[in-house]
Length: 392
Image 1 (tube, one colour):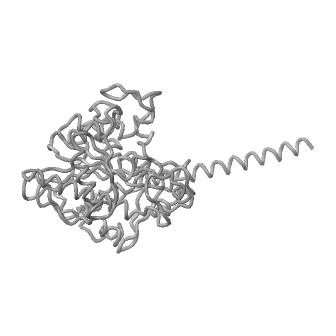
Image 2: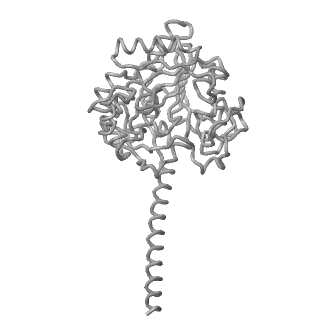
Image 3: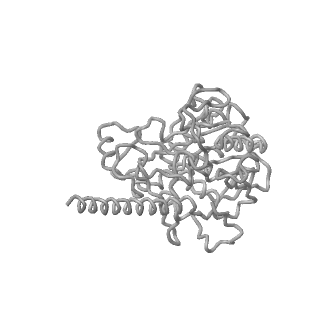
């Protein structure tokens, strides 16, 4: 009897091991496909050349952190604007805004520089333990366009090991160990530092070498976080940010208040760019209900429409920092706000500095994005010149 029981127990153990191995293999295949998924970026008519971050920091060459940099050079000289998307790759409105610029902007005066996936490693990372979807689809006029859903931090496959404490360079402020993989904690970076410090150093070199006037770092933040639906700016940028905030509220009907960049918190783009270059930095935040903790499942629907019954209940109790009703915070509103704020920053800066004006057309403002949808502004890569397609 004991032998039969032992034999039966052995069979169950082997069966359990087989099921576990099958689950692990299947999950591994999905994560491998996600990491190697290639997203086509169509360079629009205004793109004059495409470089890479490694052009500005040789230590990025051949690494998963290297990523394309798109240049739009106008016929007339003027100022220069740098736009960065996907500093945090779980805040996808930043990427979508950057791609609208890349596919549609035509610069008439000055130069536009766009880095659509600033933390390229983070875009190939994910958080399966939190139930993040691996992909999301945006409906377009020609079908659906698929995107990878990334993570806030770079992949540990690309930068490892994490220290017990991250000592920020050069201020030596002690930060969380995870911040060494967070490209909004590693500014201003250094050419021989950890991989993410090399990423931010390369961006600083773009600003210094190209003499960039304005730098915009696009993000999304929880509705329960006070620094959301806003423009974050240091002392050098706050006056321009205030004018933009007042103008979009009066003319376009949406709020994007101004938050001051803290002097005592190091590593942030809106702090270090202004301290280590002549560029005026701005960080844009739009509400992103997907990131809030007290929500239902982290589905693609929640990511795209921002509708959640738990957040609605919290809003009715006055516990959110943004207006919130049954319509949620759809992607169209988030991307539309970012487009309008970027355009208004250029308009206000150009008015005050006509010799350094930055003028471009083809990019929609808030109302048009909300009306037509984000996907309306994406072009079918299958119909584009193959030489204008960049896989990322």
